[in-house]
Image (cartoon, rainbow, N blue to C red; front, side, top):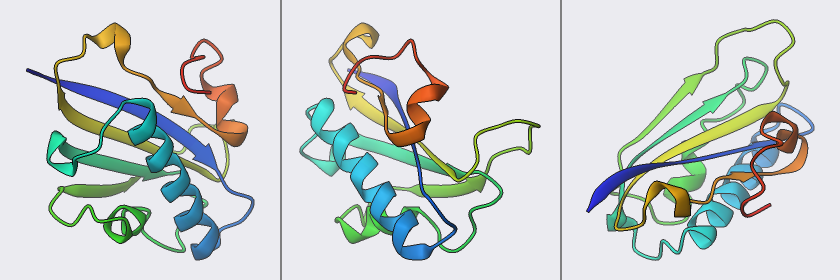
Length: 123
């Protein structure tokens, strides 16, 4: 069994805790469904990042709220690159899986679809 990285991103309209948590929960659920992850024990860890204009809440709180209480979670801020996407939440899940890399489905929602137009899986 290998550890695979599963990426996803989404955006919100404002630096609002409820919007950030709802968008993060939506993205997490899409990532889990697309990659057929039903047991949180399969998740090694998760990293959540936000663009620097989002600081109303830790997005990892959304993961805790859906039951990921034993998964190591980390929140961080993206580096401030000129022209980068505003109000963006990114997730990197590390999961134990027998799937080859080519079967991993990455998910980009809302305006974040523009980040990876080459990624059509699960969109």
